[in-house]
Image (tube, rainbow, N blue to C red; front, side, top):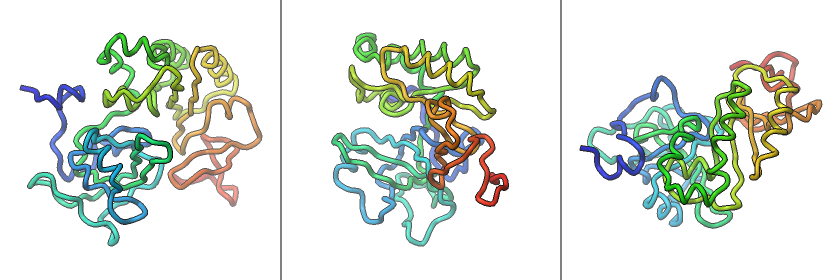
Length: 263
C-alpha cells in the first residue's frame, strides 16, 4: 500500500543509497530533488543551515539543482551527511542545489549528497502533473492554465520543454507558490542548433500569451535566453556550470584561443 507521502509527491520514492545515477544520469540544472535527509545539505559558504532554511526543508524537503559544478568524492571541507537510514553510506556525488525562502533575499546555495535523494523530477515531467492540481487552482493562475498552449508551441518546433521556477516547483511539489501575476519560466531542450528564424517565430508566439514568458534554450554546453538568441546579437551570454561566457554560437562555443570548447 502506498503511504501518504508517496501519494503527495505523485509516486513511490526510490530507495536511497550510494547510487551514482538515476536512469543512467545525474540530475541537471532545474531538476527538483526530494531529500530523504534535508539536514545533510551543506551550505557552500560553510557553517550550518540557517534557521529559515531548516524550517523550509522540514515543511517541504525539496531543492532545485543549480547550474554549478558537482563535487565528486568527499571533499575535506564537506562533512559526511547525517545518516537517515542505516544503509546510507558516504556519497560519491554532491549535487549543487538552491533553497529559496518565503521572503525576498532568502536564497541558500548548498551541496546535496546524491546518496540521500529520494526522488527527482525533470522539467519535462512536470506539465503532466498539472492534472494533480485542483481545477480551481489552475484557473486562478494564468501561468498554470496556459501550459497546454505552451506545449503546442514547443511541439510545433520539435522541442522538448518543461516549466521551471515557481511554476515548476508547484507542479513538482504541490506547494502553492505561484499567483495570478506569476511569470512562466521555461527550459527548451535544444541539443541541436535552432535557426534564428525559428527562434524568432517561437519568441513572438510566446509573447502573445497573456502571461510573461521567459524561455531559455538548453544546449549541450549550457543555456541561452531565447529572446537574446532570437535578437541575433554578435555575442550571446551562455550560462554554464563554470559561470557565464560570451560566445558567438551557443552550440559551438569557442575557447579563448579560438578552439572548440571540450565537453
